[in-house]
Length: 113
Length: 115
Image (cartoon, rainbow over all chains, first blue to last red; front, side, top):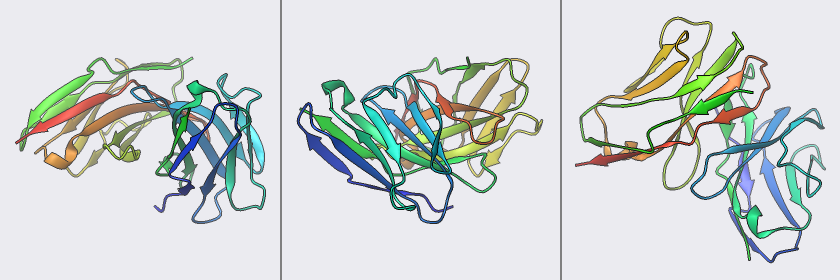
């Protein structure tokens, strides 16, 4: 099944700056997820988003994070004031037909200096 | 809360040989899904195989197969006829039977393939 695409592939930012990571679905999927993976660690769930609303979020997903689908197409993750510990790979995923399986985008590598 | 445990940080295998990666999980649910994802150096997450808990038959995808032991809460991945391209980090993941639930990952096992 086709995956999602993510932009940018890499982003370097200064601590305290806002970043927006984008997920572009190939077709009109309704259910999306954001995960992150700090280097050398396991993949962690951040948030799921269904029909333009947050469905579930983890304790990592605090007030610094937000998600939205501003134009009905792209799906964005915003980090308002980045911290050094936000440096990680951020993955967008979407469900396939039937919802059982999640397919991941290529990820955005975020480095906070 | 469910937990997923991969106790092997690294496994080494020679080309054309077979390697088995272990995964155990803890859950009180009866309906769930289990997955193996491959993460090569590019860090892309690639689905390898999926197993539905209600199915007794072990899933197979070409050279990849699983040994699903529901009572023991064990879900191992066997890679047969290993190839250099199989070298990657492999993650076991659990998802509740709720179709839209989040994935919960293990810590991963690094597979090294030697010529």
